[in-house]
Length: 279
Image (cartoon, rainbow, N blue to C red; front, side):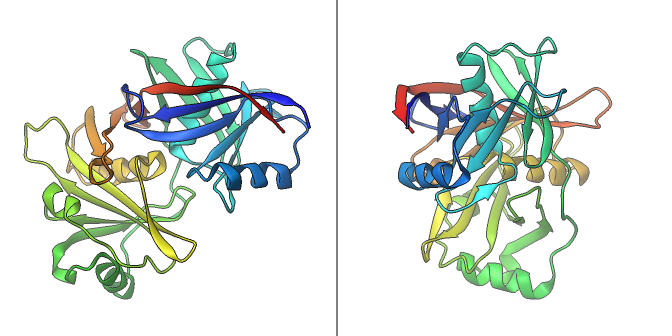
């Protein structure tokens, strides 16, 4: 056990304590998987990240991401928060303006602009329409009628998301879900044209036998953006909102490159806690 640099970062917000917190151990070298998982269980945040030296010559750093119970190959807000912590620790990227993160999902590009960080959305592992039985299950979980679901789509880029669209943002904010029953469910509803945000997002998953809502979810916002852009429901650049139902104010900025091949998911990061941890 030794003292290691530690930060807690609020992601997808420019104002502290209104986004999604992430614990980051800035020097994870020498820690076993068991030690990482035990610490992530202790922090009890949605994710805890550990920064390591890269194994790929193209990467600037490597990150391992843990929920309180499992390791994830990729997650959105830990990607931005880890990059923020790495830069704060003095990291210098090989490419100007772009940081390359190595994680379980491979190499993820993170770019810096206008005091924001943005990651290139990874390819979907599963997409396409959702079968009727799963849609019916989601309706029961969300305590709504099947007819309230305007559209649905598998949106799995690692965590396993399935996404549904409701008639509008107010319908999303009004949800009072029951037990999620093993699904990771994303819900989206559009705001009227001209609103500051294009749509409202909520994310639900099961934890310890109950339903948990994530404050701001980078991976879900990435796959939802790919879905909505592909179906021409939105035009980039735009902003999506998440967290209002929890008293948060997450802002997720979506853009595409000039060719439209990459979808970028961005936001601000704020350091809230800085010090050391004995691990």
